[in-house]
Image 1 (tube, one colour):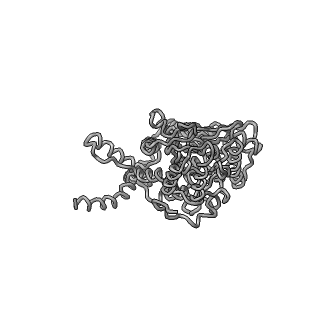
Image 2 (cartoon, one colour; image 1 turned 90 degrees about the vertical axis):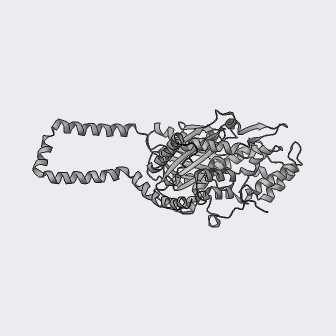
Image 3 (tube, helix red, strand yellow; image 1 turned 60 degrees about the horizontal axis):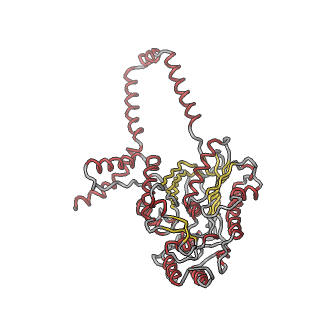
Length: 493
């Protein structure tokens, strides 16, 4: 045992050398070959070398040049266009919408007296315990309609929240980029639980007077990972749009019509976690003024399995109150979806050294002994920053454990959950804004966004930084100096 424990640190010290050799295998192999070619040319002499060159027929030289040029031209014509993130903006929550724990719980207690509501004192005590362990702070926000007794859940209040959130985010984005609404060619919006007529895209087109030929899509019912689905959809649209086209992606979730007033515990959790939020993102196939390059979008869906399909399910309880039922198996299902997504994205982003170790581990488990511990790839060799959907403390804990990440790697996710709560599909953009507000982003840094959603889905997007933000402007402007904060296991209030 002593020998084994002594060998482990030595292997860790050798790992950087192993990674350098494997990841630069072509260069390591090419260097001695180049030296050998130079030595051989020196031995031959200039006269004999010139004679050999002249012996090559002109037709052979022409074919070599022509084939290489044709192959290069074909590659340039057929390869997918690169898609860039011009900039993004997150909805800045307002002080009058703030919901401290005491306010939230007092409000819940008063709802127990509302006619038609089934929520009771036992449910309030349950939500109190959830909040204490949720990882949320005292500055998260709920829409104005939820500050009334009883909460307004009608169409008018829901539309008011939509307009407040998405128009504010789009206004900030247009101001940052200086782009005219008429220059936007594609519009993709996602909101899962509220799909009115006219749609969100119609509301945006009407508000900003966009062109009548704009391609627009409103995605609904796709859960908290829909933001990355929208990015992937916009990327596909941009492949067939004129070069230099712009796509506006808007991600949000409308809280107003979805406050649950029943007493089913599995349906009370969304009341405690979900908060106001939204983000507007501008994509383009033009590199000019771009801040990030979209490297990959990988989507995995496990909805063919009954347990995965029903683990996040909108339904009515026994008394007719509508809400979102979260299965007790949610974390297990999320873990399985994550493994499927890792299997898909790993070969696309991991360096050769990590892929080789994973392959050797897989072979050893199959051939030698299945009890051999599988090798967990170190995704920190592929990414400098991680934006994990802030779905809740348990989600972040599970991903940190599964991916072997440090506390600093998941800091942005924990702080976004603490400051803004679960803002659904827009949470990854609040996390990216946190990293930039802290001044940690550098040119060339790689970012991994991971989102989870109903269905059940796990989606990933990989970005490469071109130009970091110059200032801390954005949703963190007034609070970044206070973060990071310590988040206790159980918050006493």
